[in-house]
Length: 465
Ligand code: NAP
Image (cartoon, rainbow, N blue to C red; front, side, top):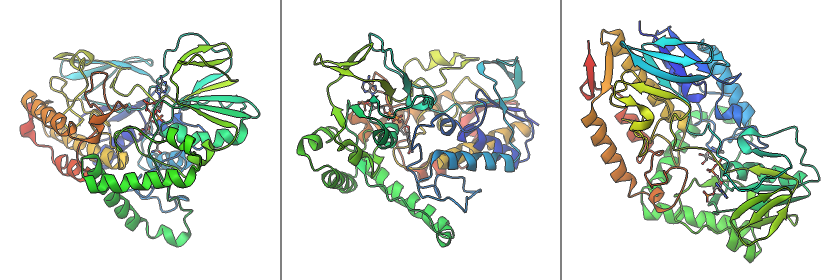
C-alpha cells in the first residue's frame, strides 16, 4: 500500500487525508508546522475573522454541519468544524513539524523536516496560497506595536489608542469595524478601494438547519452565475456593479468619502467583499481614510508620499500574503531539477496538482485553483478525489506517475488564454505575478473543474510499472 506524506493540516491537507482514509489507505502522515490544524483559520484570529462564503457551502459535502449558527460563520466555528471532522475520520496530524524540503530519489520522496527525515511514495504539498504574510518593506521604523492581520497580537490593547491600518482587502474589511469601536482614532491607508456588496447574514433558527442542502445548492448556483461576470458576461457584471454602487450610496452619505471609496478598476478584478459594517465604520468621525500612498515609517507613525506624518500608537498591516510564491517554504527537487527554478516565471500545474518531472507529487490548492467567487472547500474535495485515484493507480502496481509535459503545456496554454479574457487581467492583484501572469485563479466554473478532475486519465501521465 503506497505511503502518503501530506504537508499542512489546513482544509486542503485534512481533505486529502480524509479522502485517502475513507478509501482504505492507512499509511498517511500529515505534518503540520503549527500546534493545531486549521491553516488560515488557525492563523487569522483578528477580530471579526470569518468566512464570507455561506457555511452550508463552505463545508465538506460528505460531512454537512447541521448546526452552523450563522450563514457566514466566524473563525472559531469553522475551526471547531474542521477539528471535529478530522477527528471523526481518524486524521491525527503530527504537530510542530516543519517540512523544509523534499527530494525524489530511488522512486520515493525523501522529506527533510525539523523532526528528522521522512520517506513516502507520494508527496502532497498542502500549504495553501495564503499562509505567508506579506509586509511591505517600507523605509524607516516605527517604535510602537506593529503586526500583520494574520498574526494579530492580542496582547496589544487598542482601547483609546490611535491605530493605523494599511490595506483594505477582505481581512481589513472584517476587522476595521471592530477596531473603530475601541480605538480613539483610526487611519485607514487605502491603495485601491474594494467593491463591497451587502452581506445577507442570518442567525439560523433550528428549522433552517434542515434547509442546508437547499441553501448549499442555491449558493453554489449563485456563485457560478457571478463567476460568469468575472469571465466577461456583461449583464452579470452590470448587475453586481449596480448592487455595489447602491450599497456604497446608501451607506456613505458624504460625497467626498464616497468618491474615495469608489473603485477605479473593473468589478471582479480583485476579490469582491461582502460587508454591512465596513462602510459605516469608515463614516465614523474618528476614522480617516487616506488614499495617498504610504511612503515610509517614522518612530511615531506613517509618512505618506505627500509628506504628511500620520502619528499613531499601533500599526496593523492588512497587506495580504505572498501568494504567487507557491511552495516557497519548501525546497522541492525532482528528476527535472528544482521546482522553484521550473516556476521562475510563475507557477503552473496540470489541474493545479501535477508538474512534469515531479513524479508522485500532487498539490492541494495549487496554482490556478483559487476562485473569485465560490467555495475553496468544494475545489479541495475535487483535488482530494483526484489524488486518491493517483494513489489507487500506485496501489494497483504503478511505481511512478508523472504528468506528460505536452499535456501540462497544452493545459497551461489553454488556461492562460482563457484567463487573459477575464476581469482578473484588468488590474494588479494577489492573483498575478509582477510580470502579469495569473498564477492563482481557475478560469472556469467550479462545475467544469469538477468534471475535468472527476476521472484521472492514465493517458495524461507517464506511468512506470
Ligand atoms: P489582500 O486581499 O491581498 O489585501 C491586501 C491589501 O493591502 C490590499 O488592499 C492592498 O492594496 C493593500 N496593500 C498591499 N501592499 C500595500 C502597500 N505597500 N501599501 C498600501 N497598501 C498595500 O489580503 P487580505 O485582505 O488578507 O485577503 C487575502 C485573501 O484572503 C482574500 O482575497 C480572500 O481570498 C481571503 N480572505 C477571505 C475571507 C473570507 O471571508 N472568505 C476573509 C479574509 C480573507 P491593493 O489592492 O492596491 O493591492
